Length: 407
Image 1 (cartoon, helix red, strand yellow):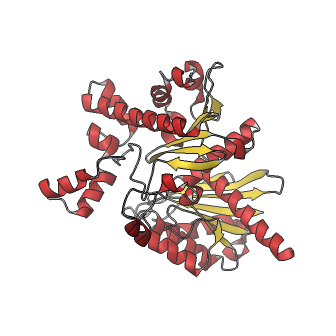
Image 2: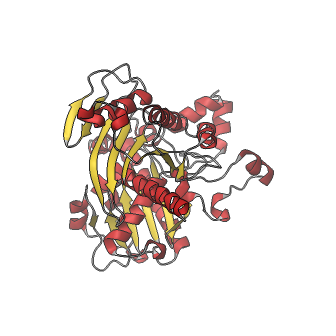
Image 3: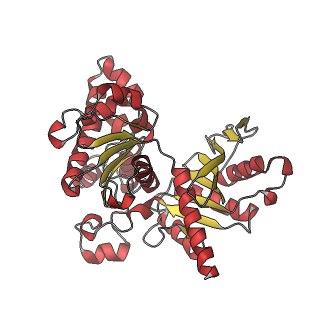
């Protein structure tokens, strides 16, 4: 089965065309990225297909246009998108709201649910809808599957997903912990199970997705039982530009004393806080580290806070899980920044976590176990492949539908 996966960022589009068989094997047919979509009509970057790389020759103003570029590129010599051989397109949705989780074949009600949930993910849901509508336009007879990041957390236990607010309000407005980065955390769990030959339903793990956005997830018996992000992706760990956890009264305090309205406060917490806000230097942890090495005390504090928050959540999740098999690092920082991994893991020997310094330095950018032989809890780097995770989920859904019809 050939699945074409689209993964939309606010100004980027990643795609991967994957061929999967019934035995679980997969083959990457093509992959690529278009960046800087809609940014001052600048060129969109490159699309890589079939091992080749070609520049986008003109500006890409929106995600609908970006998808059309990809489809025409993949159509190749045939010249017609309708002749493109794919069994389904599959799309990552950041927020599915209270009704859409997935994987599901998208219908009108599902599309409406994505639109309604855009209030909680205004930078990501609308571009995903553009991509979906482009696929429907160019490939009208091809099934369209969606999987939300929130799907991995659908069955969070009530005590973990419920906020301590009046029940009448949480029920009326669908307020709960939804969780995000679910495709990334789900991939880390599935891939760890494959690497170690362990059934996923027997696994207790803590997974850490650390990048521009950061989140932690506690997995018990193969199911997410808690996660750091909440109603929106703002809660939890300190991130590149997001504050993460803070006293809710800070918002009303800023409103009264700084004269900020709710929109300005939300913008401050999402786009001007985190590493950028504390360091005053950059949202990029590499720039912050360079500034700290040059004696910038605020940059040093930002790094300390960033790792401290991760350690706090790690301790919480080890406490609720019981015996834990492994802690897994993924995402741009988690995969490539050995200094962050060391700062998080050092000094936790009393919890059964012992890092091997040499292995940690060798782990960056690849699947690797970097714990010491004496460590009770294993430490892993597992680079993310959200697109393959989504493709597998789409194939499983479509096969079940075909089997049900055959029965």
